[in-house]
Length: 122
Length: 106
Image (cartoon, rainbow over all chains, first blue to last red; front, top):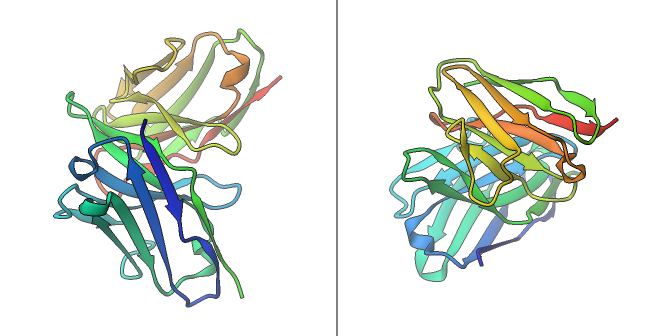
């Protein structure tokens, strides 16, 4: 059974930093791209960042570029998101998501964790 | 790529046929996915590649469309289908979602 368990969320002041972690199990972690997707309270979904299985390809949303850094440790089956210069509008539930490339050539967000809440407030 | 959805919400009865539309701001071929999210839960993929049903998803869900205009259809609405539905383009980064369509009980 695929499991994605996020941790590291919490309350932080504007301008502060936080590191999120995601522990993965139940699939061959190193062969899958992984992503972070966030959802502000009562709002829709926003893609944040993605990283390929070998970490060669990394992408960020414009809203977090230069402030957030995604990384992974395949030996530990873990995904990370380092968030710096946090702003009030970064407040959201952050989901760790497995990104699946189907044999048909299409890709989609497949397995999701339950999320970790980041609250940025003074 | 900007994604829009209509309607933003709808009320329907069990057994109704429900259609949600999604439009992309540029051509994305068939790189369009649909997700269902119930309150307090993580999203779940229903349809990928515009019309491909994800394994394990009920066949009452179907998707159609290409280029810029897409549709999610629920053939006969069931109590467990009351949720918010999001489209998402996988054509290129930055990946983007539609704003969502909330399906409520009439």
